[in-house]
Length: 293
Image 1: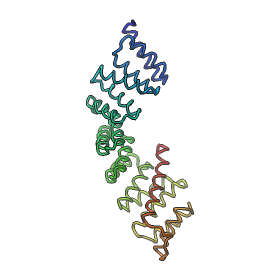
Image 2 (image 1 turned 135 degrees about the vertical axis):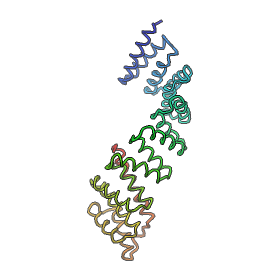
Image 3 (image 1 turned 180 degrees about the horizontal axis):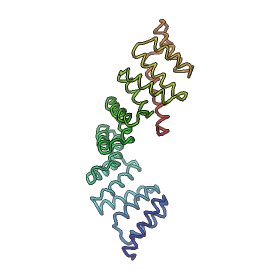
Image 4 (image 1 turned 60 degrees about the vertical axis):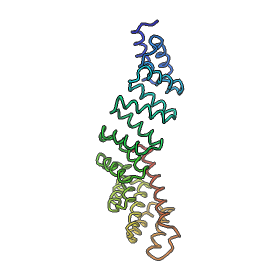
């Protein structure tokens, strides 16, 4: 039987293979280490992690469960079990594993983030939001947490707290395009029109390429429509034609002309305008989210 020192050496070797993303060699080395010490929790965790990367989920889960049985108070064993369960789509069990992790390591921010996302997917938005708010308090100024939390508030139809989080992002990064996009949209939905106009103008200034600028101008048009300032709305819609003469721009022109000059506006309703602009907002936002802005 290999000595303990050789088992430790095999573990370190396996860990080096894992860090190098050579998961088959990692598995091979860690299994050799486990032959010397079958209940070695660090080795069981590493084997489970390697198996997860190799897509061998059933064996990975069982290996990590073995680690938690061997050391019920080992937070890392529970965390890795939660990650593997989450990866395998077993979200309820993943949430339970993350919950145990937090009992032993209550300030683990990555676990709080994972648990929050799992809870939200499971249909528990308030618990998810409370979990991410805890992560937010523990790691002030973390943009990833703030964006995630704002998205949850929006999805949960809670625009006021969403806006509070987005304003925190803008305090950290005043020209953050994605945050400005969200802020402008939420100000408009909340009928805070002066702030909406200011946000759309800032967005136009810093995000001025083609269709991006057009989105900001359309936002300014929609703001003036909400004010019932038809003349200003018309001037902005005409300005939008310099960027685009099709689809939504012409629809806006027709709608505003109908209000100013008594025409039908092409039978379009303000509700339909709002729906179209919401679609444009999501498309514009997606461009920046995918770009990692």
